[in-house]
Image (cartoon, rainbow, N blue to C red; front, top):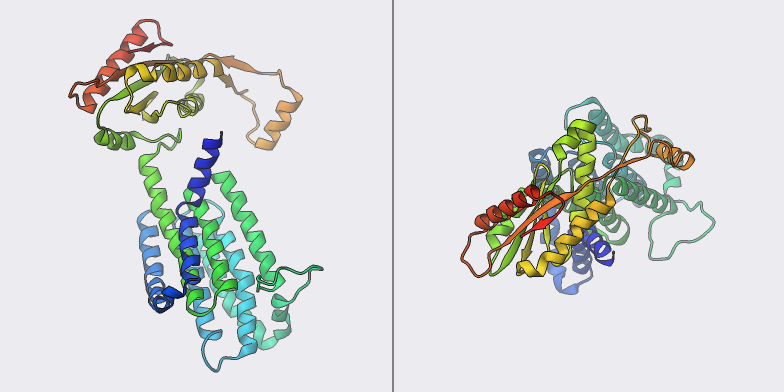
Length: 411
């Protein structure tokens, strides 16, 4: 459990958290003070263009919309809040208004499904974002007292002195963070993590740093999203979408790196075609996910993969057959003991209604079917065998396991 939690934290902080930490160290290091103009200008030029190109290439447009919002915030700061001879009253209003609207826009644009670039909801969102500066300036010229509320304190307690935003901005950032974190808990996507780190980077650009460092952190938020899109594309290419296990391409890359002795196991769900024919492909997919979750718990240093269809592969680098026997037997027992509970045909689609139904009728419609797997394993031993030859030997051992009655491990 500890290792699972550590792995999840690692994936949450990498790469967005690392990029943000690097930015904070850069902002607080006097040794890099001469690099600030260069970094700010490069990010300001590269991030919007790279964001559009990368997001367009991978058909992910929510991140690029947020990059544009960050760029708009930087443009407003650069034109109304920095330099000599600025209108201090207007600068304060712009800063407070951006601090309030920016996090809300980030959270709003991050929600929902990816719908491409040209469709009515997306165009409406972009038009509304573009209209916000015009609306703010109209209010400034006709009813400026309204905008003063963006910087006023209305809560009965004081925030720490190092939080330099007005209370409306603080509340907006807290609300946006709660929305994005809740969205991440539902979706568990790489880009959803990127939205959170981009929001935090924008906070440093609005509330902590000024001048060139403000520019750098706002654009750093965009850079985090670009990296998140690239990482999401990598995950799509190397991880199976249904089971969450590494896919065949990742297996092929590992096989090319194997050196010394190793063992490869091929695992197959018994009678899976009959299961699909009896209960349908949707239930079959649920069985695949259940089995994959147990195979993913393999111990002994095994690396699990989905090979294709109902077949899985586990690679044990540096291990002989004798070293992995108990670990493969454990996986086989876990699948057999777990079984699969069939859902009722009239099961509610809503999770909340489903929970209420389970609580009220725990024994109604409950049917559990047995699920087993057969496993064949082979090692290269001290022979100069290629990995594909060992895979073939493991496949032959799997065939013997099925011929011998299934639900067993054969070497």
